[in-house]
Image (tube, rainbow, N blue to C red; front, side):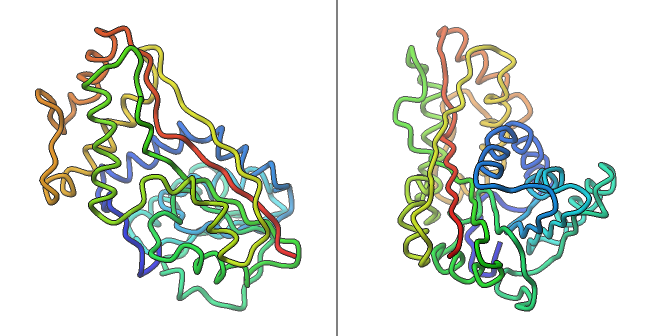
Length: 275
């Protein structure tokens, strides 16, 4: 994140655990969005807003021991956790993490790729962030970002009001906070406004059809991290739900009593190369 970011989910131990759980759920799609533009062994990668380190660690596994990855984030607590994870996974020689606002990153560095997940939507001027960091890329460098769209109007079928109303809360609190909940749809325009070639863009949906689906924990953890923002903006969970340890099971029960199929946020990947 930068000093101009508007991250609505906070910086708590709960949120850091949520980020790691989210990283596990989203890994297949993020890996697709990194490999598709050509990330490969031996490359150097800059991961913007690296958080708990999931994207950096994934990139490190792709580029291998001959490559290098630098993750940057302004939150010193989550950066320390990311460093511990890199050491535990035997990747400390490939990936490193720095505590810094993006605008303070040294301009003498150079990379083969600049990547990020769920970082551009929290920037007040995402095109400027992209424009700023293309200067760190070598000619032909990769720009690849994974973003999100929380505005699916029909996230369950047969309709499950408890799920649908909980899901809609995500978009409501993002709008109230001034963060676009549909930023994934804006990726092409953002890349163009940054002076980049029009990107390849893909979108995928995550669907839950059984009680073991990670969507229930993801939804519950997100709503729990958003509790202070919900309170600030006068928003509340559907009747009978509380932002506590029982929330995921309450969502599961409501969905499967209806026999519903549920959707999570749409995942967008966009990538291009600099001239």
